[in-house]
Each structure stands twice: as structure tokens, then as C-alpha cells.
Image (cartoon, rainbow, N blue to C red):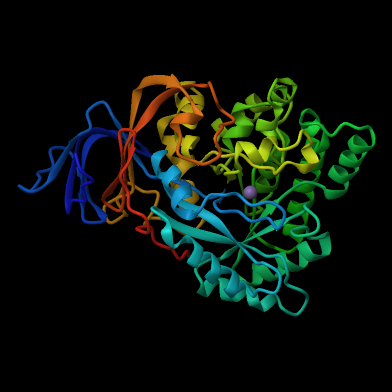
Length: 457
Ligand code: MN
């Protein structure tokens, strides 16, 4: 079968999954959008009919924390937007919210425009948060341009000197301005002094091998920073999002703040739910260099409990496509780029660890992977919804087959996966982006550059 872009597609007899529940029904796609849901929907003579019996019909996955074609100023991932979004598409991800970095000397507008130019080859739709690195006192009003640009969220870091780090005064000042101008900050929370001191102590003791990475960034550093950021956000009356919570303690702090009426959302990532620090004791600790690091055995299960209870708003990957060569260049965690590839494995791993393992319902799965990120980041109901009028971004997932995850079967450039050898339940069967099939049974069939920038509100 050739790549097929039909005006009308009838997906028959699948199990449609929404945040409210599941239903056995047909779904009719007309052009780029969902036209109707229901039983026994009629198709026109030229309708492409897809037999979806036994398959789950899910809204396309939205990964709202990715770093495609990342340039940190120190390291660069070698992927481009075609390659990065191709991997996404093959995993059922139909939208990414990535980051536009403000490089030295750039205005926020220039940063967003430059990133839009880079992303032109994308095969799925995309949006951006903006990494603000230079907005000195007096220039805060510039944040208001982000609403015009359709990128009304900024990423701030409590660590990573010298490029990204913001001190508490800057954090408070920018959160105050963000609150006033309708911009939502996302904050990477790790206490910089604690991780720096711990890293320096390990360096002094000659313990810089990969296996010591986990010790360099203790859970305490994250949990302290989460609490401090929440405290400052409350003082600034600023709705805030906490990225990549790696411990139950971080989520617990968010839950407590929320119970006191504070508008706060948080995410976690598959790596913190499926892997733990025992990996650092194994033969290949280089596979697990990331910030925050993997946590103590037992922590993933405590984190799952919060996810199961609905305390975590969504799951995202923090995808960084560093290659095996970059990762293994030197057995030194201080000189190894941090970040893991994960876009293509997000849905199968969360289906496996969540639904198949009995920790999540199907409705929770689509809330965590599609509906909630769409709502939080201003993409709903165009994205993340199985509703008439929504973009026909769909994944047909076959829950039956089980197999072993192999990096060689994946499309990202890294040449490895942190999840190598894991048992995976089900697989992505067919992926639609705006009514067009872009992945079919193991084969990418999308077109370079068909993806669109999504201005957010
Ligand atoms: Mn990140």
C-alpha cells in the first residue's frame, strides 16, 4: 500500500478511548478533522475504511517536554526536526511542545522566530515553550510578546551555571512579571548549591565515573527546590509548572500546594517510573546520565502511586537524542551530556507500565498523554481530543502483541535506548496526523515539512 492521504476515512469498530471512558464505535475523519463518532457510521463510496476491531483508537500523544535538535551551548544533539519528529510519529506522538532557547544577544521574538525556521522540516505539529536566559530588570515587559507569538510559557532553571541558572531574586522577579503578563513558567527544580557541592565532593574523591552520577544530584536537592519554587510562586501569585518530578516527595509538595489553593501543575517522565538508581551499579551506567538522575529503588513505585491517584498532570519525556558515541566518549559523568531519548517509546512504555500493569485505566492513559497536556498548554480541543471538529491526530494501538524493546527497531539517532531489552505490551499500528497516515505497521510514511507550528493560547 502506498502512502495514502484520503479526504474521508472511516475507522470502524475500534475501542475509542477518551478521558471520560471507552466506547466501541466508529470514527469518521473528513479532511484534517474528526467529523463524527458513533455506531454504524456510513462512509461515502470513496471513503477509506479501516478495520479497527481489536484495536484501541487513541488521541495522538502530545509530548510537551522535548529537546529536538538541542544546543545547550556545551553539547548538541545531532538530530534535526525531520529526524526528531519522524521518531515521534513512529511512536504515536503527533504533537510536540519543544523549546525555543534565547541565545546570547537575542530578543525573545528572535529566539522564537529562529526556532520556527529550524522546525520547518517537522512531520508532525509543534509548539514551543521559551527558555529565557537574559531578561534583566526593566525588560520584563518583553514577556508580553510571547502571547502574540503563540508561545506563552517560559522555562526557568534553578541550576546549570552559567547558561540557564537563575537565582532566587531573578526567579521571583520573572514569576511576578509572568503572572502579570499571562505567561506560565515551567521550572527545573534542583538546588544548585547542593548539587554543586555534592559534585565537587565526588570530584575531590576521584569519583567521577558514570556510576557516581546518581550521587551527584540527590533527591533532597530536587525536593528543596520544588518547595522553594512553590513558595516563591505563591508569593508572586504565579501559576507554575514543575517539570520532570523524579521523586514522590516532589509530587507530594505539589499536592500540598494545590490543596492550599495554589495553581500548580507537574509532570513526570517514563524514566523515573520505569528505571531506578540500581542501573548505575550495572555494566552500562552511561545509558542513564540525565538530570535529575534516576532515584533509589522503591521510588518509582511511590511515584506510580501518585500518578495512579491523579496527582501528576501529565507524562512527558524530556527527550534528548544524544548518541551512544557522545554518551560513551569518556567515563566521567561531569563530561557526559545529560538526557535520554524517549519520544518513540513514550506510548508503548506507558501502556505497558501503566495500563497492562494495572496502574492506570485507559482513560487515565489518554488524560496523561494527550488531554491534560493539551488543556494545560492551550492546545485543547484542537489537539488531545476525540471530538468532532478536533484535528484528526489519532493512534491505532494494538494491545495484543508483546515484544522486546530494541534500539535497532527505533528511529531516533541515539543508537541506544535506556529501555533496551524491556518487555513491551502492544504496539503502535497506525498513526494519523490531521487526517493523513504518517506511520503504518512499522513504516514511516509521512512527508518532510508537513508539520505545522501551533500558536497556543
Ligand atoms: Mn528538559
